[in-house]
Image 1: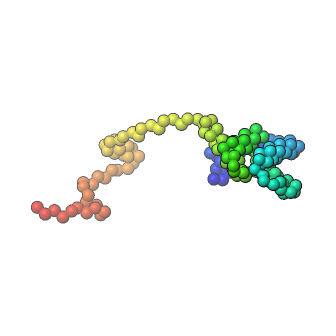
Image 2: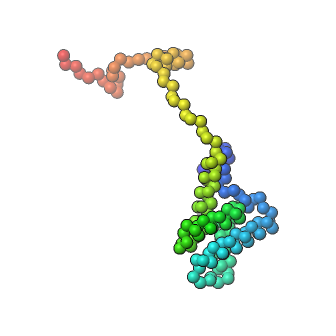
Image 3: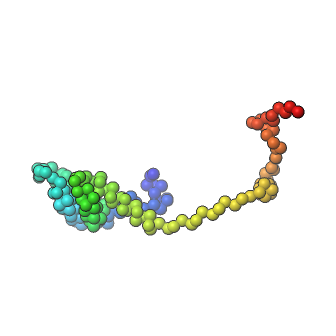
Length: 157
């Protein structure tokens, strides 16, 4: 689905696009909060500390993946992962899956309830003929299977 299709269909964006609402300084602070929370959660999973440059790269990768979401949403998702999978270290994709699932469920709750589909109106053959005739179509009826697709069976009396 393209961006144009999303706009035309009036579908919500796949992320809350929180990053766009922040000034450059606020975005830096937001990313620092995300990196701090990720580091706190990952601390319980690391057997040995990676070198400082590697750790900075890991946290920057997490911030890149998650900075479209609010700090509260990210923190909730990190804690949800930790509580549900205490023995499995998360990666940004795991946390994004939780965030997208929560967003999808929220959007479904916000969406208007569609009207109950109406039962189809049954139209008799005579009424259909009248409707077609009003549009200039003539109904030609064939008695039995006497057309090219279904030749009449040979009758032996």
